[in-house]
Length: 265
Image 1 (spheres, one colour):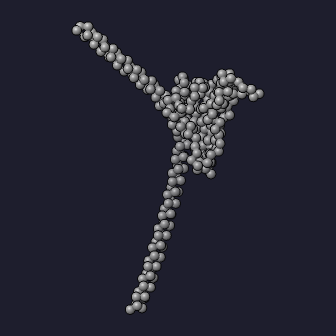
Image 2: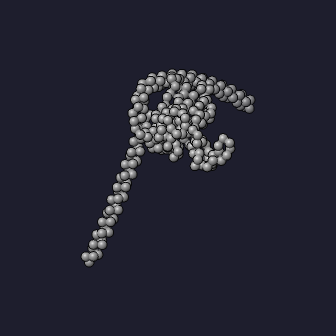
Image 3: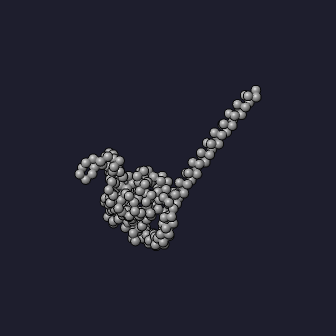
C-alpha cells in the first residue's frame, strides 16, 4: 500500500510539471503575439504622426498669408497686443509697468513654425523705434532635436543708455562702478528678461517654456478673444457702476420719502 502511494505521488508531480510547462509555453506564446501586435500598432502610430505633421505643414502654408493680413489690420488698432496681453489671465502677470510702456511701441507679433514642424519654432516681437533699446526685432527660437533636447536662443537686447536690465535693489552702477540714483537710470526687467533665458533643456525632465507655450498655443491663434475680453470687462465694470448709482438713488429717494412723511405727521 505504501509503495502504491509513493508511485501515485510521483505520477501526480510529473503531471503537475507537465501542466506547468504547458501553461508557461502558452503564456510565452501569448506575450510574443501581443508584442507583435503592439509593434504593429507603433508603426501605425508613427505613420499617423507623420501624416499629421504633413497636414500641419500644409495648413501652416495656408495660414501664413491670413496671418500676414491679420497683422496688417492689427497694426491699425492702438495698443492691440498690449491690451491682449493684459487681458490674458496668465500673461498679464508678467508685464510690469515698465514693460507696458515698452509694449506701446510693439508693431507686430509673429509665431512661425519651422518648415519641418517637429524641429522647432520662433516667436518674434517687432518694435517701432523706441527710447528703450536699439533693436527693432526681438526673437526667441526653440529647436527640438531627436535625442530629446531643446536648444533655446534669444535676442541679446541692446538697451539704450540709462536702461539697465536685471537690477533688483533700486540702485544701479555705471561702468566705473559708481552708484547712480534709481531715478537717473531706470530699472527694466520682468517680461523682457524672458529673452535672456536661453539654455539647452532635456525634454525628458519635463522642462518647457511656459511663456512660449502660452503665446504660441493660446494667445497667437486668437488674440482677438483676449482683446475683446478687455472691452467686456470694461462693460461689466460700467454696468456695476450703473447698478451702484441706481441703488444709491433709490436709497436717497426712500430717505426723502421718509422725511416727507415725518413732516406731514
